[in-house]
Image (cartoon, rainbow, N blue to C red; front, side, top):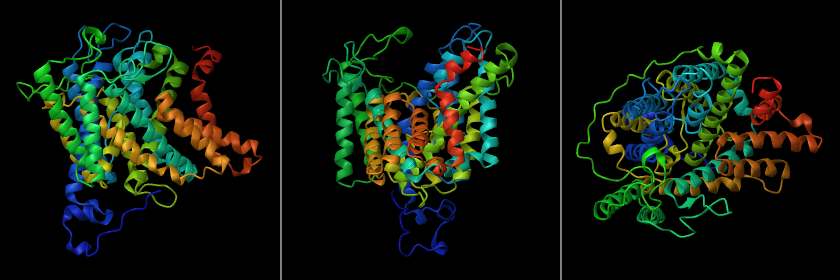
Length: 498
């Protein structure tokens, strides 16, 4: 586990600016320049959510046949503006209140579950679905304020926290590889393959490879700003290639893949007009308890429980991973101000429902900014301001393609993987739960599943060794909750609410 960097010699409180003292920049071994660069890099590695969230929740109809915000046609621009607004406000709040280099935005996975597993239920509307998000956010906030969420966090063995960080490193690596199209699902019997047919076909993949090796080359030569320069250089190359070759998008109408060698999400073209007036009509479009009379109390409560459990542990894993990479964790594996971090994250879940953009949560892509040198909340403020600017500059946000931004995630995955030496692989009582935590995050594409598997297997291994007394009472409870979470469908069937 990395140790917090020592404060530079000669850096005394009396000789520091107000900004430096408030964010404790010098104390954490950073500079304003590092924080700004880190904040910019974090923004560019997660700016895709401004485009992707509208494509997930903005194109899905609820059970009444209406799109989010009402009406028979998608309003992607409005969803994008609200997505950027809530992300910006919550990320600034994280920086100012918690002083932690952690950015927040609509959580992937939860938004898809909301779109395809909640809003489509009989009689449900988008307003009802967003009400469930507000409700689970309120419950999580209460659990934080009562100290329960933090108590669970402290009950986790330190080496299991390290395993969570390593697992998340592998998770964001596969996110980067898949989003870039470097790894894809083939038509043959194997679950994944390199590129298309086992080969790196297409100019966009060249952009990814160039961006990856450009970033690596800069990093090994200790160039400050390596990740940002890598993203910028790859984006410039992408714009030139698109202008000359007219490559186009992978997908056509309805999201169907029509050009496998095209760009994955954004087509990198300079917009004719970089400005767009944002509309925030989605704000406040929710019904807190509207789902209960439509679904029944038990079914609605189980949905809230499912949403809550995923949200509850994702941020705990993410903040540890970020703290480990930044060298901010203490001897127990805890980041500074963990209670404030969890409070802001809980408020963000509520804000996501209030803004009708789905639950906002902490993003592991923040590790890209940490890899660039971010150590304080100033980086989060920079990222948040850029998100707010994106509400007006949404045409510019769409210039950076997946293939130019995702090399940063692969590089940061390597940086986080280095923490694996903090696990005692000779002690099977911790090594087996750590192994399952690490491998199941990327293999199931879920942070929560990896954490849950680690907790459950930790309890099982201790029981098998006859060491039940060494299991913290909260881990018994959390392990049981995860068993329910993993078996939610048979549980609902047993209760007659499937």
